[in-house]
Image (tube, rainbow, N blue to C red):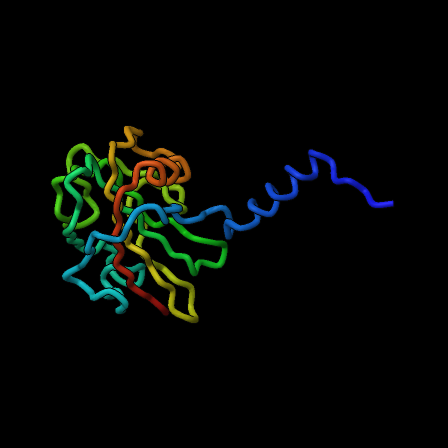
Length: 183
């Protein structure tokens, strides 16, 4: 005689399976609904290339300058995430800047424009944390810009997971620049 699964088992099993998919609980923003229409570039490095030493922990640790184009007219704010999906404990959030004015066309460095806010990163601080891959194979750093249909209206230091959830709800377009770093 077969057993019929309980309702609790039917709910708990999938929930546990999904909980294990996060790679250390630092999953990237689910943005499959946001088309890739924004072009993100840096005068410091080309997409797919190595990030220059001065923008990493092996150098001055400055944030690289970023430029973008193709932000849709309906965007009311922008958000930038910088993440390392190759980190040993799961995706490491290096920086999240949100509520960037939709009229902005780039960032000169680690100082966000007036009105923008920064989430707490995986290092536990608010602001830019430079790439610092452990010795071994290269790590990839995803600089992803999202166009949002509304500002997130969260304060500086908000937990990254809360900000990422807001980005996932409000994203109408995105673009990405990928850099690598190894020691």
